Length: 268
Length: 290
Image (spheres, each protein chain N blue to C red):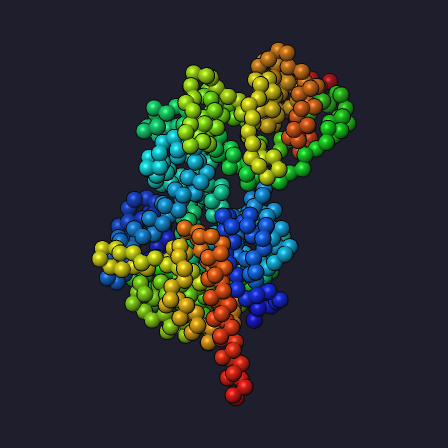
């Protein structure tokens, strides 16, 4: 008599691992073979998870067509099944999977389109947060400004791509997509929730570098250095005004004064 | 009785609230007692939980969980339970339910209400998990009977007895899904009415009604609990029988695939209300005759 843990582990192997021999041994035939009974459960698992992924990645699905999408998700579900029961959180690894999936090699932009759709999904369900007013930063002492960190609103993703994924996405919202020229170049996108709607926009190189650095936890000195590297005409004052006007900062902090791991900044 | 108090003042029949009907239900609140949602769809931030809170301000809500995996041998997911508790705190639902099943193994969530072998080991484990969930929630759970397409070689306790003993040990109530009773019993050549009679009447706090599909597998007809059509005539007959035995109970119309216009769900709800009306009238006339 198997333990419950053995039974569940063997069923998992049958439903996701492609080997139902161990599970078959625990199941009664009752007129229909155990393998056929397991197939009913496997069909439900794969079709419902595929539908969940299709709802999150509609443009990827359209770019590759539904049959190929089902083929890709069937593989993906087996290597990276959901880790928890909230299916709106499932699919974080799908873009990386597509990037490494040999049959997708001829579509180099596909993984980045998936990253854009995942960022939109994340934004839709991100925790609610209250933006800080700009006066919050006006109270920061000048000698502490360089080590200031700014926590960015949790729905935000900053996504760079070598491909015009914003135009690919927009083109696929219509019945008859206009062709998109991949040679038109890449995009630096900011994706977020605004009210109840998910929106994305293109950012200039310096603004993108600045916000991307802040979102990774860099302090103001380090984020400014990255922005200046992207565009020497970067203006910190107006970038901060815009950042607050967009409602992105939700908390302020400081990098530790002498930590070796922190971005460099001036301290007496 | 646990459930009736939670729905005091509301009609006894509810429908499952599904995304395609959300805007219509907010714009034109339908004449329906209560709404049931899948807990796991409302555990993030953004518009969905806000809409639910708004609907909750006007009518009773039932939180129907599909993800606690009460039968997982590897234990309850504490982080998930904490999120469920937090949503319960905010929504203050009239009913809170989960399933007699498991979905998680080896760190993977399989997105299916998978069957358990009905053994003393399973009973002790599920009872411990139900107790822990009830302690965290600060209230009793309703535990739903599953629909099944397989049975285990070693599963000595009949399902209704397993549920009855679970209710006795933990104080949980039972959510009797009559479509699941019908589907499982037909799939294993058992009598749905006999199954129903084995359940402890006083523990049943909610009834689910839904449609099922008839599929053929290797020349064998198997019923699939797909919640994709109207309630079948046989399940309506089982409902009438259940009402006769139990008296009126909070009753839900569930529809999850090929979701039709809201009016179709409301029409199914009218059928259930009429059946409750007939049950109340019959009981009344029996009381007068006595």
